Image 1: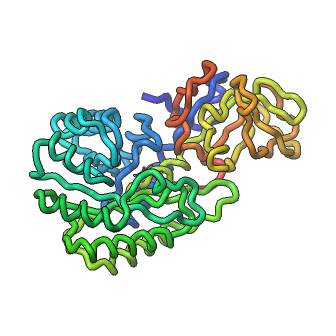
Image 2: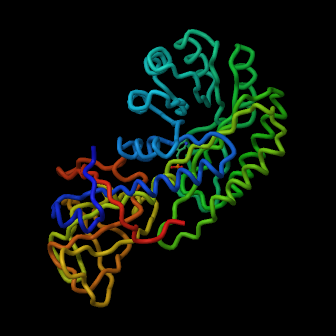
Image 3: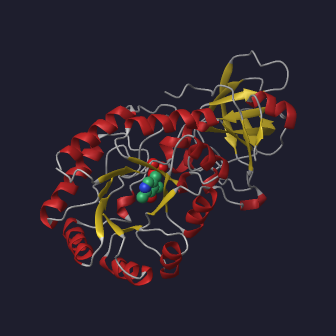
Length: 383
Ligand SMILES: *Cc1c(COP(=O)(O)O)cnc(C)c1O
């Protein structure tokens, strides 16, 4: 179990950590999960890859999340062995045969995604038949403006192939569904409208009744300078688009948020190990928790944490350098901090709940791995 502290300041006073410390605010997870569960008119699956830390999964489970989007055997094993009544869905379109076999026979997975006909054969062979199986066909969606990562470049079938797969899966006795994923940190609700129109095209041609529709993840989090539409706008676009499809009444609607459920709930407390003018050398960087500051250009809120007296001097811009010997290990945007920041101070960097520890490497011997829970207010309000 993670150590529990009243606040980030209390954690720093107690541990005086020279290593990075993730601070999980479970109340934020509870609030965010509740919002999703209240607003989304269907099943909310947490995309485990975004942050698989046991404390994060536990907080989500405690907040009422019971469905999990999993993409590998270790993810499935972790969820099924942590929570007896949690449902896992195998949402990776490309799976090893032994992995399909084990997921079905050991972990009773009965829902799989495909984006190619050969994968259907693999699944039917390894699971031992279509009985009780639901096959989701993932379709390729066009690149949406303002989306950070467009995964459709790698996965997803075109309309013609998707139609063929749906018909084939149904004729072989499976229940069928359609899935898509617009890409991460999608800032335009219209991307879901466009994707759902494409689903309409596929269904018109396939003339199958689908048992499920999965609108994927991609719901954004608020970073500095992010102009983020509210979740209500996404839900409205999805409800509107789904209504036009005229689906069977018992068709299951699902979404798979990762980032939006967890990004706001974790900060990382780093320590300044040396100051050279406006250059600060800290103990976490782009090979640790902060790779998305480069890959996605995220700008993160931060504040100084000092034991005793708070700093009361004006702020100025500092460049944060990561701990590895690589000269690329520098955070691209400056951070505004009190101008008297000094060696030994701590800097809390917030909004790192998504794709942080999940992506951290062990490069050069640096690997953040301490997680605690705290209950003070975050640097910026969430909603
Ligand atoms: C990564 C992923 C998600 C989660 O995406 P977020 O942008 O974190 O919401 C959902 N579904 C699929 C298929 C994914 O690959």
